[in-house]
Amino acid sequence: MKSKEKSCENTLKVSFESLSRNESLARSLASAFMTQLDPTVSELADMKCAVSEAVTNCTVHAYKNTVGTVYMTMKAYSDRSVRIEIRDKGCGIDNIEEAMQPLFTTDPDGERSGMGFTVMENFTDGVRVISRRGKGTKVTLTKKLSSLRSDT
Amino acid sequence: MEFKSADAYFSQSRGVLKCTIRGEIDHHSAKSIREEIDKRLRDESPSELVIDMGGVTFMDSSGLGVVLGRYQKAREYGIGFSVPRTAPAVKRMFDMAGLERIIKYGEENSNTEKTERRG
Image 1 (cartoon, rainbow over the protein chains, first blue to last red):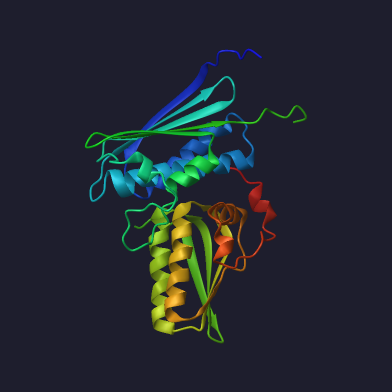
Image 2 (image 1 turned 120 degrees about the vertical axis):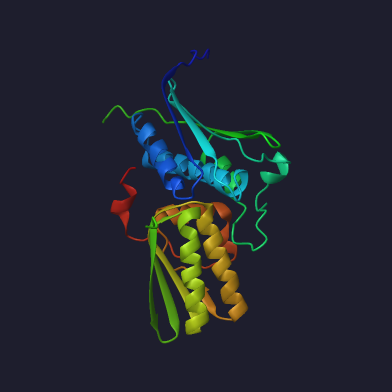
């Protein structure tokens, strides 16, 4: 089957400081943006969780011991897919493959689970990470929402 | 003013320290929850720690850190540990992480009205 070219139907760009209290703000914004597409409760919960992980990485890793700006761009497409890009201008990730391993953590006290990227991968349909040392990191999360039910 | 998205309530009966967490557990709120539980463990020397997570409306991997860290603490103290109630937001994360291999946790509780709320 030949798929139709998808087009971007809506975009929201926000930026905020990498303060830990903005983690809940970020996922609430993602949730509000996605609500327009009438997602299921589970799809919404999945994406909120993935966004929370990505933004936490900016607070904890990218801007460790400092506060920087987190840029979040959300796009909704005609095929009911959502793409959320979370970008920082922080320290970057040296070894992306290692960072994405389940249970990998830089936390010596073991108080963080090291499951951030695993959660993002499990709860979305795609995670792409681009990073440059000293320049920053861009995490792109995509999720295809299920078709709208006709009986509603 | 410190913004808090989750609260921890404590009670102790016959040596069992029960901590009830309500709200959203993320990296921001995890810190104070962790510190409050650890302080109680130190000060009250319970024989068992029970964490009730039936009232948790959101949880990311920071919550796994809180639970696994407290499980470790309980082992260090040589006391019991369990999570008898888990809200859907908690259970999906526990299931994903394969926590059933190490921790005893309850099924979804009856807070079904919460699962239908969006946003």
